[in-house]
Image (cartoon, one colour):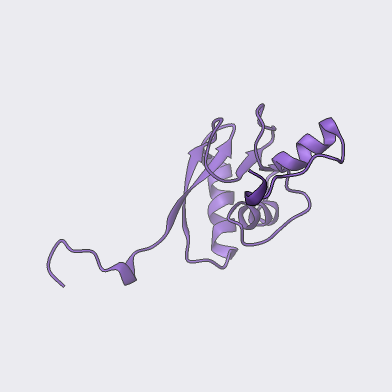
Length: 121
């Protein structure tokens, strides 16, 4: 391999991880790092501040986002709750505690709300 070239086999997947209300620091960052060590994945995460339109699922620490999005709400963060939220946010597991857009819309408009399939769009 020549200098400066990229070995695709050694490339690691890095994904932004939207955190609400802000990028974690201090104790929250330490909890996130501890939780990440427990998650079985090759994916690296880059915590970023969640904003409307953030890609992927959001992890909400102590407060819920004020816009419609998929999010894991953690009122009292600890390594176990952060691990569960992280696995859900990365799509590694499903968790009934996760708040999704469709769930929110059903709560507002009733159980008849459904997502359109690709063929229906």
